[in-house]
Length: 230
Ligand SMILES: Nc1ncnc2c1ncn2[C@@H]1O[C@H](COP(=O)(O)OP(=O)(O)O)[C@@H](O)[C@H]1O
Ligand SMILES: [Mg+2]
Image 1 (cartoon, protein in one colour):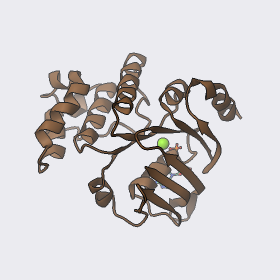
Image 2 (image 1 turned 45 degrees about the vertical axis):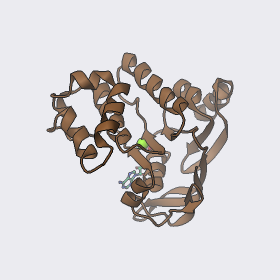
Image 3 (image 1 turned 120 degrees about the horizontal axis):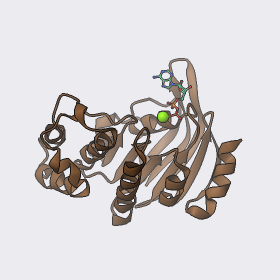
Image 4 (image 1 turned 90 degrees about the vertical axis):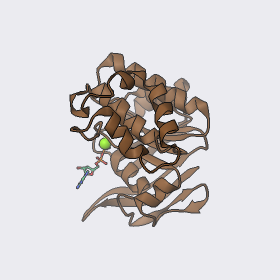
């Protein structure tokens, strides 16, 4: 579905990714694990076209999208939920969703579907996003991405900084989305248990290089924990 091959990218004169190859299976989940600063967010930004790679290629269903702008990637079915539960804090939950839905022929339907996944957002539709809890803001951020009805969802640490009870809820939603079919997910996640339960394939990123990769599932969890503790 998404093939990132030998990607080299970074900021100005700071190279971050030193030849990263990651493959997201069709209708499956690839997870990227790694310590802070390893380059995980940089990898997602590069996949989305927010950073122009200095080398390597990005294929989406076989099409070379390496040079396409972010909006062209969105038009091809990619959606991105950045790290940090970002929404417009002064707009209400409903307005944040409407902003994405407006101008889309299927906006109303897609919004209703996204709200079915996160019923709590229906109750909070009139509340400003800035007043939501971290978990609720994360759910809103994912819901906004889903309003575009993506084929490929890039999720950057959806459970970061969220209270444990809501972590389980977000995990359940991501797993449910992945099970539904029609959606592939590239998930960056530091909770190893969640990352491996969700993963069809996993990649451990260290200092801009993939140092361990393989099949997902809980069977690989010990291998991954060992790779991360080095
Ligand atoms: N906007 C930026 N400008 C310059 N350097 C950055 C920027 N964002 C991240 N970096 C650097 O790139 C490296 C990788 O960061 P990042 O991709 O955010 O890692 P991770 O998501 O794995 O924690 C770090 O050394 C970080 O300091
Ligand atoms: Mg990050």
